[in-house]
Every structure is written in C-alpha cells, then in structure tokens.
Length: 254
Ligand code: ZN
Ligand code: FE
Image: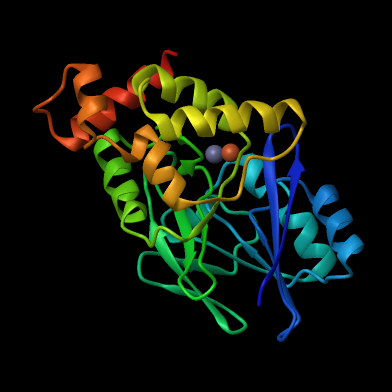
C-alpha cells in the first residue's frame, strides 16, 4: 500500500510525497519548493529517491536541483519539454511507464497548459497526479497549446475509472467552484460540492484529493457534453471541443 502525504508549498501549490514501504522508495510529485519538501520528508523519516515532474513551470521544478544535490534522487519528466526540466534523468511520453516499487504509473500526455505536459496514472494504486492539467472543478490555463489539444488530453482523463483519486498542482478549488456555478448553476452536485469547498477553505483545510467521480459530476471542463451547460451557453449543437473552448474562454475572463 502506498503512503501519501499532501501539504502546501509556496502560496497555493500542493506538495505530494508518495512512499512505498516495501521498496523504501519515496517520490515527490513535482518539486515546488525544496525546503517544504525536506521538512515533510524529515517529519516522516523518508529519503527522497525520485521526482515525478509534470511540466516545466518554475513552481513545479524550482526545487529539482537542490533536492537532487541533497538526495541524489532520480528525476523523471516530460519528453516534450525535457530541455526545460532542471536535472532530468529520464524523459517520458505517452505510453511510457514510471515504475515505482510494485506500482506502475502510466504516462499520459496532456498538452495545453504547456506543450509537453504529462500526468501520471496508476491503475493499481488508483491515483492520478494531474499537475496543472486538471484541477478540482477547473483546468489549467492554455499557455502553450490551444483548446483542441487540451480537450483531447482531458478526454483521456475523463475515460479513467471514476474511483481514481485526483491530486493536482494547486489549491484553486474555491475560485473554480464559483466559476463553475456561473456556467452550470442548476447542477445540484456542483452546488453541494461548492458549499463543502466554501466551508473547507474557511477552515483552512485542503479540498483535495477528490475521486474523479466527483469531477465528472461537477467540473465543467469535463462536461462540455452536458445538455444543461450547452443550453446555458446557447451551444446546443456545437462540438464538445467548441463548448470546452468557450468555457475556457469564459474562465479566463471571469
Ligand atoms: Zn503550471
Ligand atoms: Fe503551477
């Protein structure tokens, strides 16, 4: 059984450590900030053996070199932007597998937020590390690729088992919930989740991880096929991709 530690780094980044007691390996999902990660490793008595990088933004790779120097850990990251990942040892892309003890993580390419962005999915552990591609009730901004590519990446995540637990790069859930309600106001599952999120955040508690099942019911960026959202946007007959693009555009201006 994998052990998982989630904690805050920088202002709103999630740090995530996974530990496999059998092999003794410990991986950090991205490395937003060396100090916060070292603190958590020490508190758990774990030694960092791996970093699983999702994309090149500084708030995801800023701790790479310091952690590598300190632990000699091995850095796995996206093939499509390997030249921008400090200290990368192994570049991986669609269909590759990152083996972590008895757990395999499948690499899924999700270009959009960045050109080479990847996510890590373990069927056996039931975990998805989605970086800045998929957030709770949101998705990453389209900095390096367009809506069509982002939608095709998100479609792959939409096909994963509903019981998969989603971990992502940022605590953006409250702002995402408020936007989601603006395009899907009558969705009762969304209303309920929003109320929970408002309460959790007012108590300073994290809103993740979340099962994908909840995202399938509440995240408008995974629901461009939903008749109520389409009706709300006046796009009853548009393609999923076009509805997704419209939702993304509205979020940018929200
Ligand atoms: Zn990013
Ligand atoms: Fe980020």
